[in-house]
Amino acid sequence: VDIEVVQETGSTNADLMARLQVLQRPVLRVAVHQTAGRGRAGRPWLTVPGGMLTFSLAWHLPQAPQNLLGLPLAIGVALAECLNTLNQNVQLKWPNDILRDGKKLAGILLESAAAIEGGTWIVAGIGLNLQVSDELEAQVGRALADAPWLAQMDRNHLLAQLLNALATALQQFAGQGFSAFLSRWNALHAYANQTVHILDHGQVLHTGLALGVDLLGCLVLQTEQGQVNVLAGDVSLRPV
Ligand code: ATP
Image (spheres, rainbow, N blue to C red):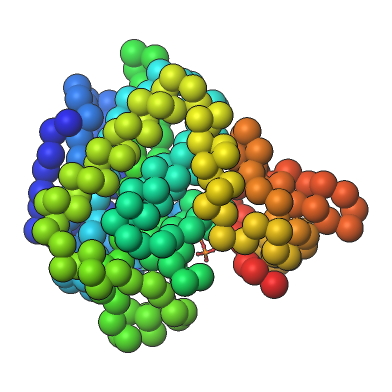
């Protein structure tokens, strides 16, 4: 993996997406500060200088883009398991947020493009809150989680652990797809057997008991009308 570290950029995901078709090898791009971080559907990912670890990994997978539905969840599993070995006690919120004490500690943005030579290039962007300020919480408009003792850790060492976890997970996904991650995701599910709303552009689309995820990475909901398997698409989950 080629490793690039920049002091400041708009978005490490955008930087790598712009170069995807000419990449020869996997690239890890780390930004000390990101000024235009993005979440899903173009939602902003806000940062404070020095308070966050933001990086993106570009990687080639043999699968076609349509077979990568479970990949964002697999990446969540890999990161959450790694953070848990670092004493963080984190859980997963479907589809792919990492929570600590029910608040968002990290977000994942997965983007992809079909590769010219077959398979898919993916770019997995991660924003991990190390130390959040009141100002950042006010900007985002909700309470956020941070991890002060990760902030104390040597950044290179922390990054190396996360990169190792991601690379192992991507190799596993290349061979076995999401089946290698299904029970691991469900073991980390923050809202297992709790009632949740699924929102589409702010409107409640479904309400039900969140049972877990299926092999496609859909959230399995027990609703009054029966079982519904919700595709991540652009919907959001809220506990009721
Ligand atoms: P939600 O978290 O609202 O369910 P989502 O999971 O789709 O939505 P993403 O698109 O992954 O969220 O991330 C964007 C959202 O994350 C923003 O709308 C904002 O609410 C939140 N956010 C932005 N910056 C941060 C941050 N530094 N830490 C935690 N959450 C943030």
